Structure formats: structure tokens, C-alpha cells
Image (tube, helix red, strand yellow):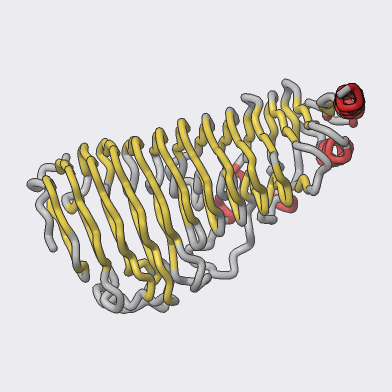
Length: 401
């Protein structure tokens, strides 16, 4: 009995020793201020090297660390902050970052990039000023398929288990936030602003990513407030105010990535004000074979939105295109629910389903739709093509299938 008791005391001592040893070796969080690495907050000096140097030391720190951008205006060229880092990372923006206006410096796809990172937080209440008006005149992609790239303000490639919160993006040259091959990311309390006529300035652009949550944010821009392209899966969007902009869009799909399906999307409790579209699914025509399924649009208010509910499988902004009304899109759209969507439509056709003749839309459900046309040319109407196996309950305008 005494031997057993003594052995227990030894084990207890060994356990406590290991705990104290672990606590002694754990490093406290450490933050690296860009001013300590030569950054100058004069709005003129290119601070790229100073920012990258601060990131280098933060990334090498064996514990939780981060880069601090203090109050002030910092000019910053194209930079990419790369992992793998030894611990979790924070990029704390308190001041304002400004992008270059010299055209020789902005033909790239990234202004500020993060890649190959896990457990990253970008926050701080500061602003990202893309100074897009200097670049929008160079955006000729609508006419030129070989147009030169313009940078996304924030680009995240292969970033997992991370957060973007409490930041503001102004006048991006291209997309404000671009996510590619990301997993388990939370975007909240962000504000995006650009003029309604600014080209290709998507608020949040998502591709080949999954488990993305976007909430409690305001997005007003010149393109889609949120766009989800091929490979977007398990996306949860709620409490978002959209406008101006092109609405919240799924697609364009089918031009590339034949097997990168779009599935498991939830868009709820959102407001659209004066947008060119409301909730939209669009696919190229002609297109590759693919699938977009299991989507739910619920509890959405439209205030004078054009095309509040639209499926467009004849999307083709550049030739060669199929004749209008003869879509040969190979993207199958099915299992889509529109529920409790109400408000005013600036277009007479408030519900417009232009599905593929080759693979008609399947299982499209409408429940509690109440959209009123705000113009003088009569009540709102619906238009449908190539839709099968659909259902309607309490729909205004009346269903057309």
C-alpha cells in the first residue's frame, strides 16, 4: 500500500514538472510594428519592403504573432505575405493602406496577397484604398479577351481556418476580396465601397473554396456584391446589405472547371437596394457539363432591384454565342429554393428563369414570394423557359411553369 502511494506521488510530481516546463517554454504573443522596419506614413513612400520585413520576422516567431499597421496613411505596392508560419498570424490594420496610381505598377492580379496560411486574422478597423479610378480606364476586358490583369485588393490563396473582420475596402481596381482554394473562413463586419459604374469590382469573389461564412457586412460596388464561381461549396451568407452592384451571383459557370461543382449555398436575411440583379444563377452558353445544386435563398428584401430573381443559362457577354433562346449550357441546375422574398422590382419581369434547353432546371421551389413592379407599365410578371419538376406556394407574380 505504501509502495503504491509513493509511486502516485512520483507520478504527480512528474506531471506537475511537465506542466511547468511546458508553460516555461511557451512564448507570449508578439506583434511587429511596420514602423520599426522602416515604414513611413506619408502617403508617398512605397513601404513594400518594410511590410515584408515585418511579416518575415512575425512569421518566424515561434508563437502567436502579427504585423501591426498603426494609424497613418501608408503607400504600399504589390505584396504577398506567405506561409507556412510557425504560429497563428494576425494582420492588424489600424491606419489606411493606399495602392499605387502609377500604371507601370498595377498590372498584376494582386495588390495585397496572403497564401499558404492557417489561422490568419485580418482586422483592425482600418481602410484599404485601392485608388481604382486610376485603373478603371484600362479595364477593357468586356471587349478584349487578352486584357491585362488589374489587382484584387485582398487575395487569399490556400488560406484555412481564418477570419477577416472589421476592415473597409474602398475603390478597388478589380475585386475587393478574392478567395481561391480556401477552407473554413469567416468574413464579418466588412464594408466595401466603389461607384456603381466601376468595372469588375466584385465585393467578394469565391472560387474552389468551401465552408465560407459571410455576415453582418455592407457591400456597394460596380459588379457582384458576392460572386460564387466553380468549386464554391458550403457557403453561408447572412445579414448582408447589397447595393449598388449586380446582386449576389452564382456563376458564371461552365466555361472552365467541368467537375468543380457548386453545392450547398445558403443566402438569407439579406437586403438588396437599387441593384442590377437580386439573386442570380448564371451559366455560360455554350458551356462544359457541370452541376449547381442545393441552394437556398431565404428572407430577402428587394428595394427597387432589377431582376430580383433570375436564372440565366444564356449568359454570353462575348462572341461566339448561341442564338438567343436556344441555350446549350451543360450546367445542370437543380434543388433550388426561393423563400420569403419580397419588395419592389424596377423591371416588369420580376422572376425570370431562362434555363438550359439541353439540361432543363429541376426542382426549383418558390414559397412566399411577393414582388411588386415599381414602374408604370403594369404589374410584375414571371417568365420561364426549360424548367421541369418545380413547385409554387404563395407566389406574386404568379408562377409561369
